[in-house]
Length: 236
Image (cartoon, rainbow, N blue to C red; front, side, top):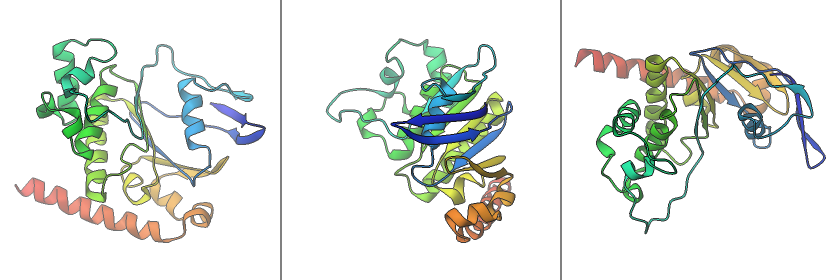
């Protein structure tokens, strides 16, 4: 997209936003509440028309979407496998593959209402993968998970990207986790304040003005712990 501007209720929510994402790239959008992150996602998927500027998508682009949250009536008897059949029945092999790719292969017979938060999000990820997306969008997809759960979920997303080659666009407030999992970060506050590699954005004056300086240390701490996790896994 280029020069994207959107007004909602007479208020300019996004102004002159330029955005692109390359195949296989993981891009995270960060910004305070009301900064236009969800509006930008809606424009990307075609749910909102820009007041000016343009959105260009590759021909035949397939998009998978993982929402912030999805409420399911806890009294409704609904297994994970049946959930994947809504609203359209999917092939058994395709459902099994999507669950395995999302790290939820053992959950097919479980009741949706009895899943943990992390398991639930992995099932939503599996549902998004059914379309074999070229672009996977996650809108605050780990809201409500603790930090280890969020980190594990984003590591799984990185594995999905590596295996399928899809681009990944994430929106999150969990700066210390998502920035470490990203190839590029865009800081949004009605317009693009700054963008680039996580280390560049974390040290940018515009970013620090919005979020302070503490997240850069958290980013380094996460990477240190993440590195040790891989060291332990390699040793095992």
